Length: 419
Image (tube, rainbow, N blue to C red; front, side):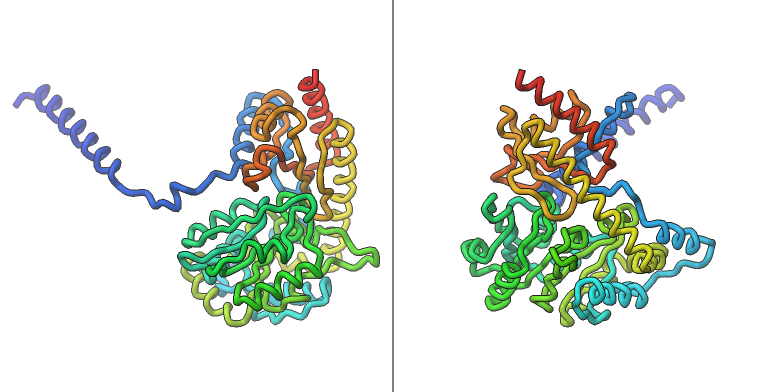
């Protein structure tokens, strides 16, 4: 066979082989949990915003819950010290003894709750804490009750383990939060857990501690776990006497608590969180953590010890006060431009805005606000079924200047819609 014919034959063989491989790949099954997983629309709008900025246009970002302060100064300095070339080995799967003890001490000093450090599990962000907790309590067919609206990834995680989400429609009357009457109305024979976020993402509203006690007592009496997201607890408003809001652990010591270094401490990209679990869950979570993650980042854990120094906590309290001031700016400006906030938040850095009066559904509102006003906001379908088309989440985790600029752009956008 001459060279030209041989090359042509080889080309045909290669083409046939490629076609065969494509045919085989077309029949390789993708797991249904991956096929069914909904996108996180806040990140989808972030990608669109980045594309607009790549063209040289400035986008004001109200779509992500990412504090603009970054990590506290002492934490950044501690990380620089840790990253000096020293050996950074794996830590224990549950986290370093020093950090677990520091977290337990923080609960006593800040919230008046005594926590055994052995019940603290340090994780690669709060998402990993949720993953471990749900992996330890949810079986195929388990029902998990949660509010609608709520954080979308919680639903995805429950379904990943074969559980069923039981969404409960909440209203302005309940401040978009669960109460015991709503939980009872949604209860099934297969209810395994009740999930609560206080303060909530996307609404920034909290569950009153007495109501929380009723929910926990009722769920406990029926043999269900209580999983409480306190990621934004330390960004909640202080009581009239100046005291910090109470942790669920003050009324239910056996609740599963999820928390994070991302929001109050501003360490979003550090991917460090924790959970506090009943004693009988510690060993199961340790085994799961060994298999899923080995451990959280060693340098991040070492640097995070600086979070609990008095100067750092003072810095974080100044930031919390700044978020309260920003909330005032946002609420005033939204009222001025005619976008109602049905329930004012008392924590976190979000407002849940009703856009139904604009004549646009929430998705179209966010699309047009991004492309016409260059303001990125998250549509309600990320968080809810019954408010998916009427509400959007606006994050005020950005600077005052950016807030004023973005709200001015939205005002112009609304005026054009009205015209």
